[in-house]
Amino acid sequence: MAESQPDLFDERGLSDTGRVTASAAPEAPADAAGLSDAALIARLPQASMATAEALCSEIASRGLSAAVPALERLWRRFAGFGIRVPLVEQRVVLSTLARLEGARARSALKGIVLSKGLPASLLPLAMQAAAEAALSLPAGFVGPLLDHKDASVRAAAFALAPRAAVPVELLREGLSDPSSPVRRLAAIALGIAGDAAAVAPLVAELERAPSAEVIEALTMIGDEDAIVHLGRFAGNHRALAGTVLDALRDMDSERAQRLVRHLEAGGPDSEGGGA
Image (cartoon, rainbow, N blue to C red; front, side, top):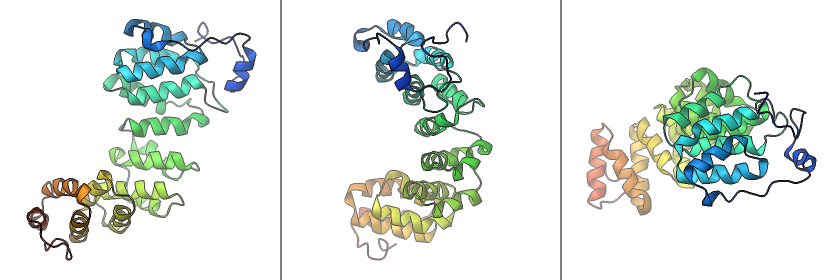
């Protein structure tokens, strides 16, 4: 750590603005697109603030999972910094690891997110990266973050909750969250857990901002009410009707299968597709 610690500042938590003014001759941005894979990876661990973003962006666009060890070295180089405001290098490492495929990138990102020394200022970015990468994190870590003061952290925690197997009673509290995006993610998490308390908020989301995630959550509940609402939605929203039909076909429900047959035949939808 000592030999790789940047010498352009010596106070932990210094902002990027302070780093820029401390440098008399900032390095020009890297022409990352012109570098070979090996050259990209070799330059990354000692990248400057000006070049790190360009290098990481190119690594992510190429899907270079071989760059994970270099990304980890870049992260360790700034361990303990970014206490007040995350540094550019820290932000781009998190976002790049989230975009890379493969177990190595997932493991590296998980190690960062669960690190006991992670500064509070980096938690929102780390959680958002974890949610983007669909990490499986411990329930004991995710659960307490469901009522974090930062709405972006709460949102990421609810997005991660199904894989973490967070108890349903904790998820229900999210239905009354002051943030609309958090309430939506809480309803989806509850639906995936099969809790009927999510039917009403999911139906509301189905009308407000339909998505495959909302449809999947309703099918995971699988009760009569959810099936009827899905049938009506499919009859009225042809663009997503195929997604609904695929989800209904996967349900272990005779009612759902009858509804699929009815919708495929183009029947009326006034009573949930006549199912």
